[in-house]
Image 1 (cartoon, rainbow, N blue to C red):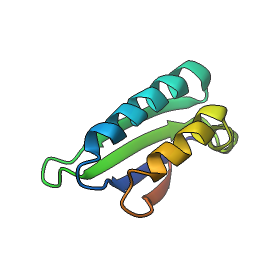
Image 2: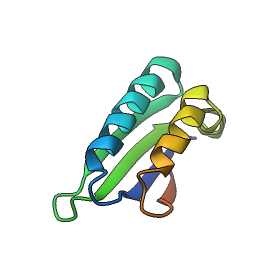
Image 3: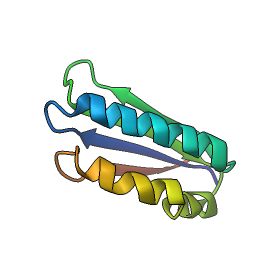
Image 4: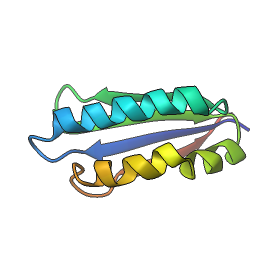
Length: 96
């Protein structure tokens, strides 16, 4: 079963460029190392410049679980934690 995720991330004002740099590196690592990840993209809100939406799609629950334990996710965690303004809002979706 294909799994989708929509995550809403609020970034501290003034930290947008830093967030985008970290996330670009993360996107590259995911694309290079995770064949079970079909989509991993970030979008910036036009109406709320410090709000970003991450859209993800995985072939299976196992692929999503593997994503969460990769070295690149572990390395990005502290960097993202320093620029985020609170916890992300995560919506898990099942393809019908």
